Length: 227
Figure: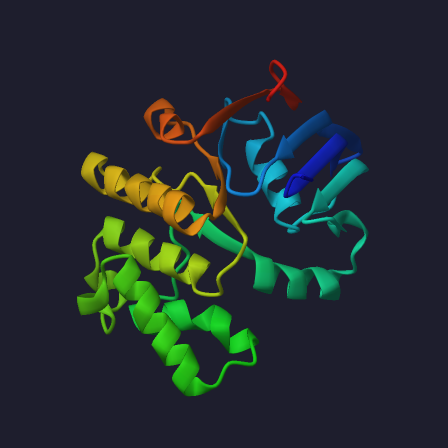
């Protein structure tokens, strides 16, 4: 069976002034459907860049990048935007919630880009917020929620479209120990019970231990040969 994500010889650099700064060099990595992969490495190692490439936010300079058989590096920006909306859920360190919208409205936002009717959207949002333990916080603004609760709203927003792939960039980085443990348990449940493929960037060794597989990046290269 083909992997959900296939990466071969992937390289990426950025321009800084008149210089080309390499960020990733010759990355080769397969990620199976249903995997929970942690990406670790020091700041500047290319973790977030790799995550953004897999999620279709950025494009590589060279190499093969296929997700579910699609060559996303060759897609137009418009096609990529549509693909991301239906296939990728995003979780960020600082939640990225709209402060003037309730938890319910924040989670509903991705569904506004779909063909679902209002009633169907509301039913799905309510179900998803219940899944993350926030059925009683639907009408609260982000400012009325704890950090852990805000991150659970962000997770609900990430999964409400039922994406195949969830990308999480330091999802516990701004949380206290208990809230971080709760978020990691929720990610594990999404992986084990719903079969979601999760790729998580983290500096936290304890968080990385919750994943099924761990990959280290150092100066834009993978350390060792990932299985």
